[in-house]
Length: 276
Image (cartoon, rainbow, N blue to C red):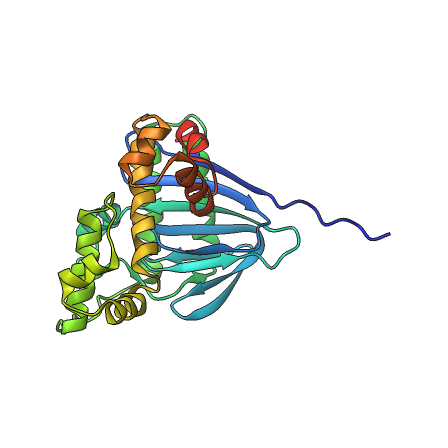
């Protein structure tokens, strides 16, 4: 008799520290095969603690293992899955660009928070990230928490942040992509159509879709969904009722909101609100 496959697990703990705007910490254990392609408005700094997985990022496949640090650039599309039967455990810091800019302005003005590598091994930095988690999870002064946070961000920038890339002149296509991005930000909860975006940019719907997907790695619809999830998180942290959050963030109904949120965040909106 063959042994039945164990049921898939996806357990996420979310912590949103009081007094640290722009910082979110999550611990995850998952055996799910695939997390769909998406992006975040924050940098992701993760330590793989057990098992391992595969990222599809910047057009390449990257395998990461326990002990490594993975850094995903803000607003860069990616997907991932575990290729371990027992899944993988990882702890992730979601850090807003403003937090990194605070560190850069005080330390290395000639650098930008741009990370050309996805994963690397640095035992001391991985240990510092995990100690930061424990500091926020257990009783500790805000001074200690802030000190450890700045230590981690500074060491991360020192270790693998790159010099700014040269700015390229904006062509017609690049300008259209930026207009599309700005329009989606300004109308995040509206029922935007591809025709609306084509009218704003002056490109055909097909050409605009191809240019945007080439630039961001995801479609305008997936980008809009990522923006809506970020907006929903803000409302949830403010204690708004789930039905109102769904409506304010632009979802068709609460059921659609819950399904999409859990798919991308890993927990239901209700659980996120309780934990955060």
